[in-house]
Length: 169
Image (cartoon, rainbow, N blue to C red):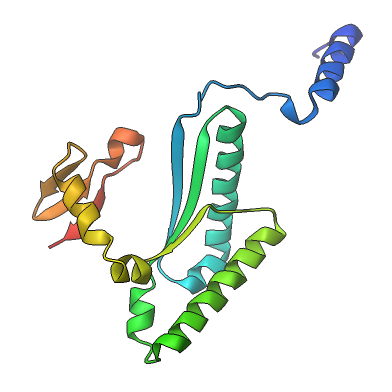
């Protein structure tokens, strides 16, 4: 049996009450930047239980890192290109579809006080010609390597369990 002195409990409870939302906060992160990303194959996946679980996990990570003095960006990347290729609609209908689905997802997350800083989709990145210049920049850094004609990003340097293939030949 563990016994805790009454005075110890009272002193610590008073500290928790006094600090309120600041209890446990530190500045060990010293405003270092952290980016947490969720990658979804399509819009409908974001509404599945598995993705909602990941979203909640990411949200909790962000809250923990923020409370320790880190600057955190949360983003959702949606690979919507295959969905759009299979859907024959005009640009106005496409914009409406994307905005409607984004707004549905954002409203659902807002309901549970989960906010992401960025919502990114492959079509937008492609249309704004942002993919190739970015790949060109990172190809010549020490962050990438070629393996079996694949361009790989060294994510294992950042505690990931495997590197990510960026371009598969």
